[in-house]
Length: 185
Image (cartoon, rainbow, N blue to C red; front, top):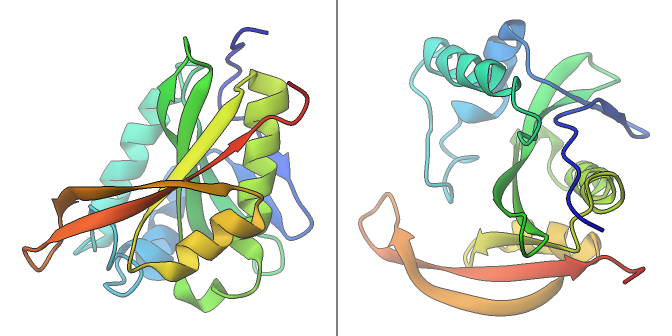
């Protein structure tokens, strides 16, 4: 099976609506995760200093949605009707039928299985609707909770990449790589 891109479509889970970002999501994005130093601690970007920075990022995603090989979901929490995080396809190798996903979510929603729920739904879509055979994700070795999300989603540890970047404090950081292969191949 080859890759059949369909773009960012709405996916519904028990607690979430995974959908395309909208301009109105900028305030939620800034206040719930992108402006929070604790949430962004292990990320290469952020925290954003203003709602306007979140708005600019969303506008870039809106422009990119015209392409059917872009996958960036806003995670809307059904019970609150607000956007609490994002999950996206970060890197793709269509020839190898492999891709990498990334995610981020406001700390108010941590340790409730919400990110695992989103990751499982996105992985199912990327495997069975788009056709990827392998999906991987990475996390800073110090961000143990992110690794637990990957494990709960059925991903297995593959390797540790050393000195992949420089953290906000100027030191190098290492990443653990996890992957899952489509089960029917």
